[in-house]
Image (cartoon, rainbow, N blue to C red; front, side, top):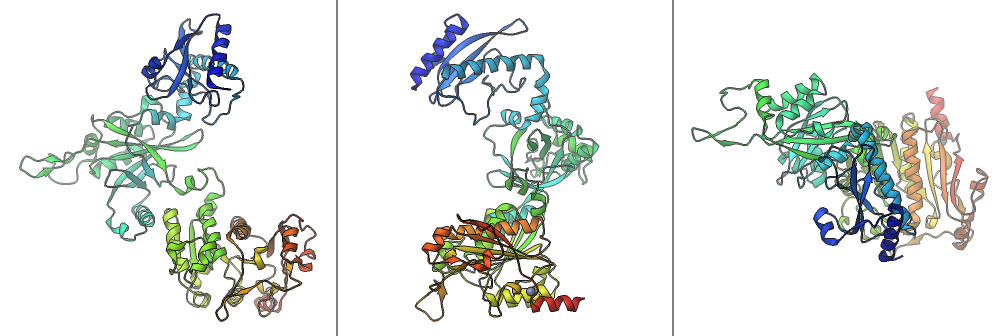
Length: 605
Ligand SMILES: [Zn+2]
């Protein structure tokens, strides 16, 4: 349906419903009334309200109508920010931003929207929803009342009480980043810039976070500095004390972040005082307006507060949350507290390990140690998390640097270490971890890790991940405190005893034209399933340690395996009677009782 036809249908329907020809708004009147919007057509409709007044409502359509829904605006309205859901130009917020409407019946959509608008006006007149909605959706109304054009304050703060002193850093353009303490702020900036130097050059100042018992309504929004003190006082004497402490710290402009729980979770807003600009002193030097008249520090706290939070206007700023809880789940993922507090060591940062590490970072694991003693080669680039810009660099260190830049709130360290040096000189890394992920593809390395694991009592679970030929199957084995060790499923030279696939006419390993360099021809896409398997197994092991060692296998569809010359191995079907024909996940018990771990258990007993 074209826009013209849709407009005609709406016009006819309005005339029929209202019994009059509705007033049409031409382009000139639309531009004058709604200069920030791109409405192309509209009608002005009188609505009789229960208080005896008639209020005019505009029905407005944009160029995407009827695919996009029309808007309504209240022409006869109270002052800005007296009614929620009515923007400064009168446009009413009735539908969620991504609401879908029936484009095939534009007249019904228009009439429905008008009816909703009339209902909203009645609710606003009755007053019941005014304060409630201002509070529940306070970030929206703060946005309408904020200083347009001012950069948002970037927040790394944990959004919750109690009120407390925090730190703020201003960049050259005046944009602010606020964090719990100096160390967090400095580390975050160093991670983001990729330069440890940023830690030293960053100058930060005290700021305050005031946690309010309930979100503010527009009447509470600070206009002058003194209003900041009034609003903080609603959070109790502790909050007032914090604001006084901030004033006594005599920073030029004071930043106070306010937080509260709205309907959709915690929200943050910020106010910056603009009072304190240095000016020339009477004797030619500069005097600070906050300390003027007081020769010696300290300035009495009450005096500092009254000068800092004076009659000068404040800037009302929006806050952009950049804290871990927001980034990894918008504050709504209950698993996150556990993950943020977790430490994972990933040994082997090749095609599998590097992508598993990146997944764990995205999931919100708070601390990662990446271990690999290999440099990235051109032949790795096609299926590695890192690309051409990292060729020649140590895989673990380069990946750690990249993840720190992408997730500056995280703690990611890269270690250029082989397994034997790790075990002999850096055992602490392993002992302190909540989970170890091993994806080295080397039996020499993982056999040694398993011996260490068994000898030290298997206190930290290890997830071992590896691929079969052509990446047609992948394994993730979690070795727990009880059940088998890794060795239980491998022969003495590292031959897997429990493959998922057999290769009746030979395996597929290829050799480079160089001595002893074997590789497996598979691509980044086939690898994806293996990454998912090992990352999922790792995440599950972190959230709930499996009671006993267990194996998860990902298997390609049977037809793919057959086409490649492989058959389903009896060693898999024997352990699980649920191997899906179309490919997928199989969970199987991991064998136990090898000589190696049985002896260790006997020794411990
Ligand atoms: Zn064993």
